[in-house]
Image (cartoon, rainbow, N blue to C red; front, side, top):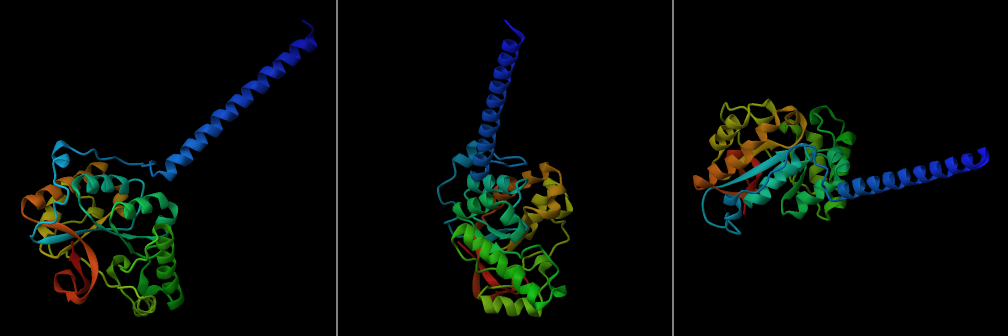
Length: 274
């Protein structure tokens, strides 16, 4: 075989190898994108339903009893929200998610899953700012932009807003009134127990949730923000707390606007409903 023939053979082999590599890369990218569309790119732990979970009745919270709402702020995040949704699905619990606009735009598949699994999608501002420091124009953008993204992703217009840090502002209240959104949704936190963003661990989080539980209580939890830096083991509090509350006779509901202000939730114009 001449040198030219050998060179042509080498070129052919190289061309074949490059083409094969390109096919593999394209296939991987396609699979990666498909997984993203299906919400499968969880970066944190996942929850697997137990035999106890599988034995739950289809509607365990239809029975009468004191009712609480699990509310999750700052999400969604691929580190925490998929696990939380796994637990809620296994335990047959609906919750209320106060979502940030920027995180929702970054993780649209998770937002769609939140809505598809029957949870309430609510507004928590675009970038979690301190609202008293914003101009009226900035305030309007924070609220309206988030509502538009959440509406586009879910097909449902959010009607609830929770101020970041629970700090209202006159400009925020005016913007909410113009947009027809119920704001000032707070929570019950009357004990000295640490919250999840303080990373107290699973045992102390169960104690926090159980201690704060009362009829109509809106319990403050998080699925993004500072809590992402806590140990992943802390997430184990959620299935344990749900089981403990049910064992004590509690049922679970979601937050809804109400003409009556809730004294137990710092005067929130909202109620916990089935």
